[in-house]
Amino acid sequence: MTRFGAELRAVETSIPGLLLWDLPVHGDNRGWFKENWQREKMVSAGLPDFAPVQNNISFNDAVGTTRGIHAEPWDKWVSVASGRIFGAWVDLREGESFGTVFTAEIDPSRAVFIPRGVGNAYQTLEPDTSYVYLVNDHWSPTASYTFLNLADETAAVPWPIDLSRAEISDKDRGHPRLAEVVPMPARKTLVLGAGGQLGSALRRRFGADPSFEFTTRAELDITSDDLPLQRHWRDYDVIINAAAYTAVDAAESPEGRAAAWETNSTSVARLSALCASQGITLVQISSDYVFDGQKPSPYVEDDAVAPLGVYGQTKAAGDAAAGIAPRHYVVRTSWVVGDGKNFVRTMIGLAERGIDPAVVADQYGRLTFADDIVRGIEHLIAVQAPFGVYNLTSSGDVGSWADIARSVFRLVGHDPERVGSTTAAAYAASAAAPTAPRPRNSMLDLAKIEATGFALPDWQTGLERYVASL
Image (cartoon, rainbow, N blue to C red; front, side):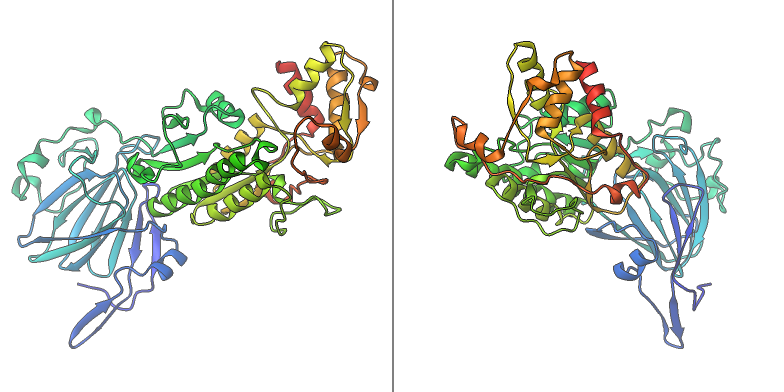
């Protein structure tokens, strides 16, 4: 019998992510009423914001009709409109909980949230039973399911009505036992811009992980209008956008300006909208160049942006665009060093060729090593840190480019006093081509990310490690 007057609440089960819900049902002499799904209330009470796109109704007229065990590649919210069912759920996802079983009776006062990859089956306990389910992907005949036999001895589901007397389809009778089930793989992480400094570091860390996919622009063009059609996006949980236009000086030219805006802003907006529609977490890489560098102290995440040049303007716009995705991390870095051409490698080359450079001494900040950015991204996702903007650089005292150059010379066995000093203005005036304006102060405050339990060594320790690796 339907229970009336229960409070809306979620009950955790033995299967991770599977939530049993009590629903308030209001009844009188005319019948009853309930809010079957109410996003604001239920998300506040602990329901994942799973963004359903399709509503289905299943009706069974006979007691004992049994459906399942099917694990679909989408999340599912199941409730009963009339009658009563016995529900059985078996975790068919890769991982330690594979094979875990949970059962419960469901009437109109109860519902269940079933995460992707958890097998679900239902047996009707009353005649004329109908149940309703919301899913967050459109049904497709090409969708990849995972199945388990209803009579599997390992799961040993305690069916109220013996399966020998139940109404079961021939297809459901033929599904495999648990030992033969191929687990449903986890949703994947897609890395865009896999050929750059950060992309290379991500590939080095996760290249052997089958749940990671790496693409370059030649393989997946995020500037294309048909981006939503280029993948089955519900297969992805996280997109790390390591693709960027980073030619700071060239961005000031007419051609560079257009390319920087397309890659760093317009494409991010397109990608963010895609993530919003598909429930994907977007990791967007930002830059100290979104600030003008006039602040006398380190920048915090919610300081107003005021970029000086085109590159900084496009990155600031990209940060704002990333906010379209409800699940987003904007990781703001400074002075990135990784594979390929960079300031540290340039200084090593000058030292070894006997060239004594004059290096800018009136711009200040900290280095950020690509491998450390990877660790920071991994940490934010693993601990499920609140979504938003996070500064991520090495720690330690502020240093100028000249300070860093002298440290590099010292680490490769050359006299650091060979490095002279100049000003940003003098360097720009002597350059062969126009240079973009750069922030004087690139210092980023790290308190927010450190509060999540993540910390990095000071930049000088990181520099020693990086130079040693070369």
